Length: 168
Length: 104
Length: 87
Image 1: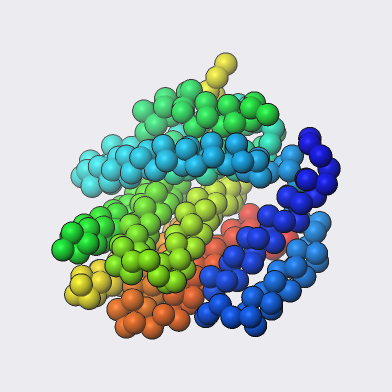
Image 2: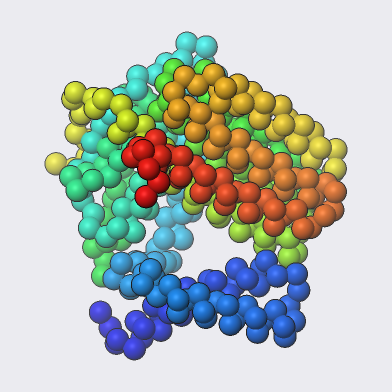
């Protein structure tokens, strides 16, 4: 935890910038009227919903280092997603349907909620696996084939998310 | 010319993955396996179609809006799949044995 | 270039009808929710394609809102299946 005033800036500043950017993208043109109105509305929304915003501890992406790390991860993930889709296409287009659906459990190794979300969504997008439930003990994952279930051991997603959580 | 070729390749890829997703939805035996096909293929198919539209538009205000749709779909589609899967998992009987994978 | 976009739109519309069969046939409520989720994504893509084909920029906003509404609808129906109430 660094300087408290700096974390205050992040706590209110980042949601405001995101909301204001979204407003500018949706508004028909940039004029004094739209900028002023958008700024006022974004500020009101941020102040009104301040209980719902993320603290810096809860949201790892608020730190620049973690954000850049995440961008690198997304690059790797995109390649994996294309491979995943080709795998699924092969299974679905195969007339014999070579599937063996099963549930597996991955023990919980994360504390941060946002990292859990990143892990779950990445698992859903990679080959043959689908996150079903997250509880205190671990992730319940539905696997389409035996190979997909085996691949969950020491997957690159797990390695990466654990590294992200440990790097403070 | 290169731009047009790129757009056609992206569109063909997008429609192919949409086709695979739909075939999976129709062919696979139960709700979980159907979700496998639809989430992965629909997410990538939507991404490819939107990238084709962005390439067609070039650097423009609409491209930015299309990019917002792209990011939104890529975040919400796996999340929606997770919520549906959770509902399905809790509304059926629990599987008797669950294999444990991952780091020991 | 418009021809390619129109062909893609026609393909998407046909695929949407096939998804509709799964929403009709079921057999469980979860299958129907999956089908509706897929249809929502496809229709959002159709609207985005349509806005480029007709040159009506305003339709892109409609596609964005449609995708958002589909996500909310999926969450609501899933919560209802899981708990029997929405909250």
